[in-house]
Image (cartoon, rainbow, N blue to C red; front, side, top):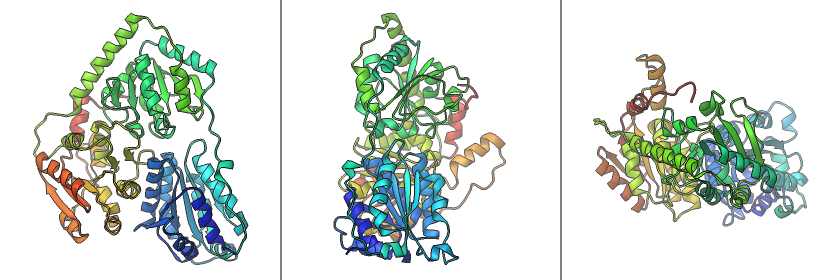
Length: 555
């Protein structure tokens, strides 16, 4: 008869999961022992830190559409998972977190490393549950996976007391097909028709694309929708690639902190068509502080109540099906109005391309020039992971992505240290696909222990470090708010090339765009990871804000 740990692993395999990331401890040894017997079907990826294990699981969901699973022991192991779960919570990633715990007898008294993990995790998970009996495991696992994917995806947590994992029980996994989340169909046809007529009656409607488009596999129908009705579109950071960013109707990424073309286009709008948009990606106050733009809300989730988000029509249902219904309708629009809008879009697009790459001469490489090289080198199939910091603004603003699920960034929580474990996740899943990791020097310092994981797993990933010896985005905001009163942002970096050599990798320090191109191309041909240290000009973001104008209180 199997024990609880063996039933747990059988249930996880039954959910079509083949990877678990984590850091083990004494209270989960039984779980590891159960994995040992099925390790060719379920691979355990040992990470150097539990936070990175949860980042790995988050990226797994974004790349595959299947929940990622991470494992830790009790106490500090569990609390280390917390940042990654909070990241998954705000970026709407389905993650199933498993944490060990003392025995049920020990849980009712003071005990070594025992803290109320389920209560701690509750605010940043959709469901946090202590499995009190082994016979509950099949239902708990099925509910965990269903809950993580239902509605707005997010993390869930199962706490596993050690005696429950050792308890013998004769139970079977539940059939996932009988307990899958029932997604709503496309929205109400009558509401869809009214919403579409309202959009086409607007003077300058703009489509705002959010991450929900990628989750609902709606990119192709969205492209056909904007083309059929000649609608300009802007994307959030999380929705990069949902619409090809070199498309004539795409006017950029909304969210970079300057008065750029995407924000100007939205300020011109009288109607915003929010498709799969989520406030956690970008607050509505950012683009509608004066509340003059009315909203057509299209998502599987009903609209949040927010005074900056006045919804005229709400179409709740599967986004892909809703867009398909919209494509089946025809709406008459005066030719003169359509041509006038297309002319404005063309002017916006020209301004966007003019603003993309600054021309000032600087001693150090500019972040925008680095991204320009990447646009020339990267294929559409390359998965790019981006950390948090100054470089995130430039990567999100300038890097052209043409396909969904090819750009991974921590956005809602904006947690530094995300990109390296996310890149490990991507390369572990897609061994034959190119993966690029981009990270600031601050974020790299938080996660570079995972270089050992890369070496152990034989993952050939180029890593570009945007090196400016400081927390660049905090510095920029200090300069804007307090002038020369700069404190707490500068540090001294180690020799990144020597670090790469210590981990048995190749390392390059580049000072020119030609050297950068050569190093990146070599990194993709290499059979091991490659660290590319690029000294960048930290003042460039401040110059961009001065050039384009700072954020204004009203769009």
